[in-house]
Length: 336
Image (cartoon, rainbow, N blue to C red; front, top):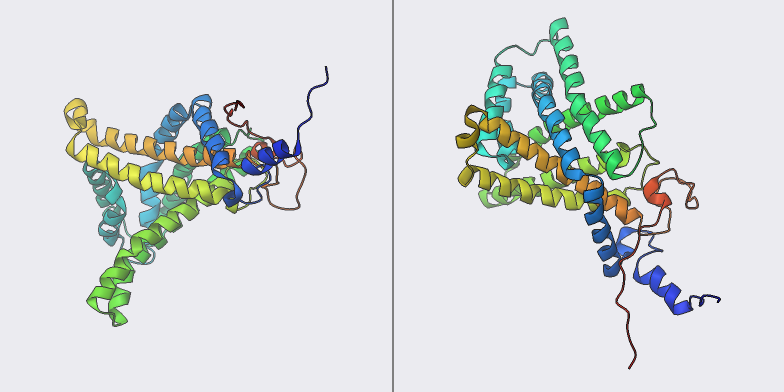
């Protein structure tokens, strides 16, 4: 028996109502986003996001203190490295108090152990710190390959170079952010703004910081996975959602750890390290979640979401762009 042919209205419903022909994310309708969210839920389980995030958190905490050392060393080339403690305290406000104290103690040790002179030893120490910190970035690259369903096909040298480049870029990003946060109030005062306007513009630093974090995540989602690069629009939504979840999640975790948890009673002197590890796990989970959202968002449309000349499906060298995700089953309607 010949199966019934799909009518024009049915094809229109699949293509339009589900966003199969969306050339930009905002063209995906609500029903299409429902499909995406259901697939993301399944992918979190299939990709073992929680376990992978734990591995990323482990490597990240190992890379944290070398990254701090590299940041202090580079920062000391432009100003007094001892000032970084006070300036970093504003960035660490999303962390629980115990984790902030642990980082502050390490910063004190780093900033008082050496100067900012460009000696051979200082340069060698800086390079070693960046190399050590890149191990954490390499773990993030692996996790994003998992989220985008890609196998690592790049050479070892290329992956290490990418990890080093992203690590150095992240350190420079932190330094520029510190300058923005600390210099903006004094610049506003020198320009003659009134106190009210200074307060309003100073508070605007934090939305600006959120935009910067979103941009950093977009760079990660675009360049870290081993695939043909997605267009910026197709990584911006996941990075925006991840940024909002990270801000809310970090603030909630800090509130819980400061007021309701018993980490110190359970783990004793290791309580601060455990709290910091848990925060890294939360951060890694959210970063992977943003990548899963981007991946399934690309799989909602037939259109080419990669850079360059549009290619047919199967020839785009990116799993998310070369495959279509399943749609949620619809309830059958009955005519009475």
